[in-house]
Length: 303
Image (tube, rainbow, N blue to C red; front, side, top):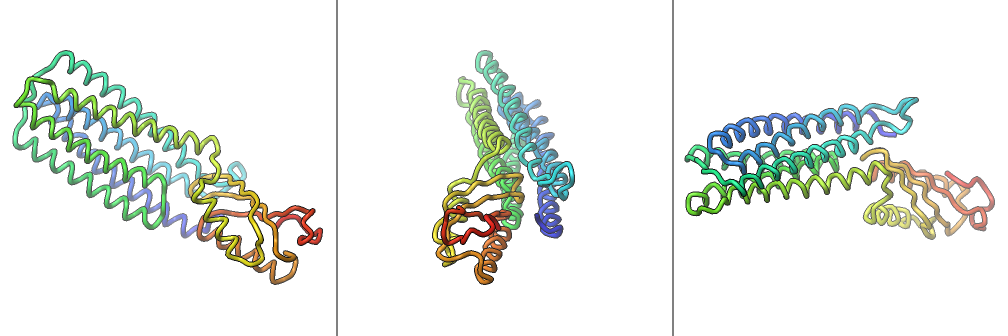
């Protein structure tokens, strides 16, 4: 349904964002594991596991955009766009596993507290990691302005939440010397709960898309408004949307008319409507109407 050039641009932008995320998160993972090990901080190690999950997410993002851009074929007549949803579903499972693992370690540390060792270097590195995550979020957001990918939007939000989590972890390390309470373990548990919530949200969203999610209220409103902009259309009765990927959507739209849809002028208007739906909303539409509608003059039921 899409031309090759837009798909190529979309895939290239998505893969570049994935490679950037992989490189940045790999550095953060290695550095935080080292910091957590030498400082004996479970919260920092929890944060490192979170970055490791982000590395895996970046690899899956690269893979997903590589497959999603392939043209439709005999086996996959509706394209390969749903691979993005499969990748998102897989990523959500990794996130949930990480959350459970980190939460388990944090609870153990709450029961059996251990001394935390830190230095100025550790503080500076954690501050740097917050800055890196904010920069990564900005880069992904800039890329996503050109391709409007739900996957990249999730990556941006994940980077922003990671920056917040690292900032909270840093706060725990700074507070630890002034109290005997295992603040570090408590914050590690909070990190795990944050990651768990992110994983559950991602799991639910991608599971719904894989099951076959219809048009959301915003998309449905846009479609209705677009059709009603044309005097030929009296009303939009139903919209049945089939989602095969972010840029592979098919819709069957039932309409009623103000006048006959079988004049040359009306036929041109219907073609223009379908072209707008395709170019602006990435929806391949089939318009149909009730044969009992006198305005249809008992002609062909769909265009």
